[in-house]
Image (cartoon, rainbow, N blue to C red; front, side, top):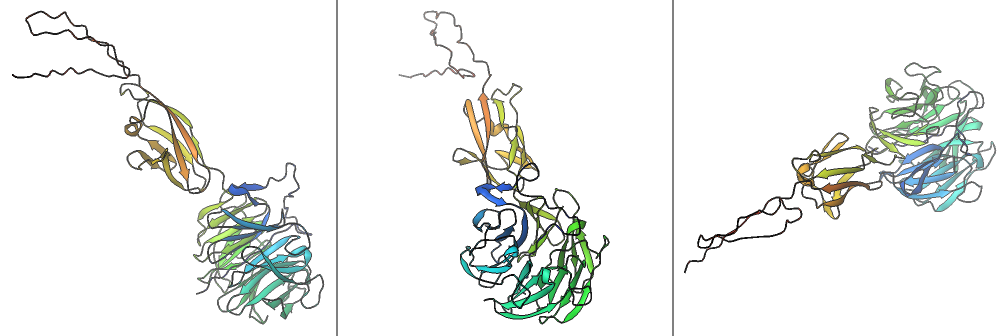
Length: 448
């Protein structure tokens, strides 16, 4: 069964107070920067390709950012403007079966088409109400079975359909709250049978149509109960036939079957994990990606809403970063060294001593976020300063500096009585040896 994806956007409502923090500086907003200078600046739409790469539409800097499945920057393109490859509020992203990328350029009232690396290919649309024209288009989705693109033409209160070169194929809708009418259509998703699902921000509902726009059914109303919505801006369908709707002002995602029967929900207001939302996409494994413009980030969940991780990730840290170890087994500093590791969703790939990798289970132990370097391993280190490096598959390396000492008393030279002639005795003298713990005297006897 093919995978369906959807994207959406969120914006400040004209008649209803849903604040979006401005990205113009000051104390209101700080863009979030991940390693390699990936910028997530008011993300308002997301799409996932077949390789798990993320395409993020940033309203804050009018760019498309492409990240791999680990959140590493692959490429980015755009910038404020009306030229080819420039954007004025990119608000929706879709990907066709050839990996071409389609971007809704809202305030330029057009759709732009790119290859997977961001090379400009073509565009269509302009401001207006005629066929193929737009007034602040919100989102786009592509039916990969038919190669038809569906665009929610928000302020014309309609849905338009096109081929992948922008040729107009049809439309439906009109302003209102009746069956098949719209009040600001936003999100669009397509199931495996080609059925089209549209969310409406102002009518607080989901409507369901066939591919030609014939009305089938609807669900939802304004409210906070199960199956109700407060500005549902996006919608996505997974490969198991479940529908996910980010319920923006209720700070949750709701999950339904294809007939609109409520199944579950997750999320709450705040900036911790599982709290959000504004746009949504599904990868081929059924994982759910949600963006937040007010908390400029992306969160990843399994289909049941269990948190799996997010971007941008805070850098990992260890506490403490400096320790001491005494090789004297009788000393108080002859002990395991334990540090607290805050991985922040980064994966610890190993601990290094120079080019040597420590062995987990003997050289160190890890339980939860506690990492213990064993005293047996520490006792093998040379006196002086040793640096162990916590190495992550993504993110920076973290050094743990350990001062190695040895307070074991050095035995003095033995005091021997002078040898007594004829009693097979001999006098030995030597100076104490640094770092010595004992002395052994060996006798070699030759038999003639």
